[in-house]
Length: 561
Image: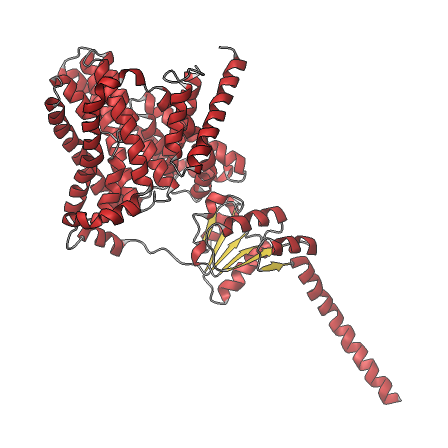
């Protein structure tokens, strides 16, 4: 295809996404639904305006890799220790429940046995990409239910990989021993991959990224390269791209730069994910869906209601409150892109026909759309139906209570100081001497490393990054100080702080009175003028002996007179 035509079609997709996205936002509708609609409008099911499937698919896969990478960045050993067991039990329990009951429902709907198995298994998998995107937008990815949900979604991804490997081997006519051997080979590959990544985490990644952190652009480029490379390696080894990208994020989760990396990738990640949803909508074949409306309705209700219920039952039995189980359960109230891939694989193997694929597609479209609303408005929805969920509440949610009692308390800081150069570091030290609990922020990795070695509370980050600010305890700070004199940096920081409900006083730094006036007009409570202040102090010290000498001379003159 001519490159100019590709560019024109690409521009058309973006313009359509912008228009429909603006309409959806104005109507307070989820952007995910709008972007899926874009794919339907511009794709084969709509006006057939574009044919750049491979280009959009490439951008979509890159966005998926960055999404799972940013999730892995937030994972630490404490999360695995506290939520690993419930994620595994819930993930496997939900897969088993949905497969068995879904199979029975499909038989009652008149489907053949093999088709019933395929459709039932397809109903078990939820979309990690969509759920993580929604939880990230709501800033609930680090909540208890968010961590548990991400855990069992990753379990589902691993299960679907094994299922598709087994089906591919079975479809190729291999004996049971051969495909069992292939699954074991995948397990060995996974262990080797974990070992290699572990060695890199220990010997290579820390010094490499510490050097890269001296340049914001290089740090971002290195992070993207690592995420996409490990996603590709995971795919080549027989895992999904999601698993590889997630592992890449985990490998950097202990680095002091992880918050800065994650915040810098948010905008690029969300832009690229637009193409995932467009691609999803473009592949929906609406023309063959009419005959599947009734079974799709039945199975959609089963996914929307049955999957959350089994999650609530399992989590309740494991000692979690009904609210936590409900919020986590909503994340499995839809099927995923893996479900569509599984159905397509079954048709290519001759196990199911096009009607079964159309059925899975229609269930996917309806459940993804409806569950998006359920998750976005999960809290008011829970408040409305909470009385009806009393059966799921435990008298003593021992597991959740244990997590709360053993959770590492978050340290509270009275003061946050941005910029730990000579001036900022002296400010932080003086505040600490006066009994203040100070958190320092600096973009120089060497400064961060040196101060951490000295036992100071310091984080690596960019003051101009609006997403990074959301990771700081701004709401509890009584004072926020910027020791950086660049007026543009301080103006941006003031805008960021204003959006994060900081009730404390804000002090910024300027080189001259003109910049100081601009900063005060922008909301700074106090503007520090280090050069002017230092000059005044120097003049005072210089003039003090002169003043004493003049006073002595005046006394002598009076005595002589």
